[in-house]
Length: 167
Image (tube, rainbow, N blue to C red; front, top):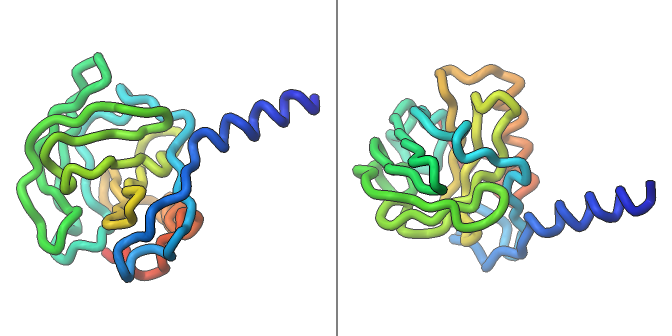
């Protein structure tokens, strides 16, 4: 039993990394960040709506993540990672364990980490190791209250400051 606990702890540690000092105002400096260990790229595929982000005017915007079956996505919709909404177009590739995704154009070309997704892939939390952005996505709006609460807990766990990822 002790070996199983150590193996689980090591597996979780492999999905966490210290983050560089984040952009002022979004995350605590030096906070650790972790990605979703049991991420399934095929289940993540499809249309998402931005439930919450740090970008004013993004609530309700859509993002389409079309999975190619080989670790890549065609992206379209609205990019809510900057100071204002922008066109999201291009590709993204799963480049690491636990939902670590690298886009070729959108999201400021920063690695996007799926920090959490509920077991039925209804709500997801995205962020970057730099802390430049974070957002909550949902398949349908409004997202269930308990899933929104869980998403906020994940943001806090990953060093995001309460209230900085607004609706």
